[in-house]
Image (cartoon, rainbow, N blue to C red; front, top):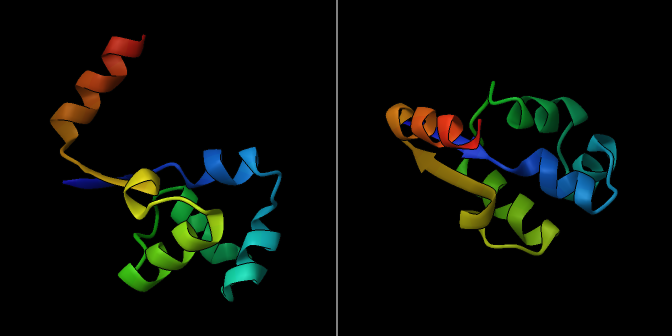
Length: 78
């Protein structure tokens, strides 16, 4: 299983930089970067803080997927 996120997409749609979002929720810009790039899976507390600050449900920001479904999703869009 893998956690897929839409953090970059949603952050950019709100015209926020990584540094601005990080400052708003009290983490480093590097934390935002590593979450966006899938290097780091956020804690429940961080996921909830991100979702709250962005005004969306945590389920709209992060999805739990299995890798097989993710590959199928990508091939449909190609």
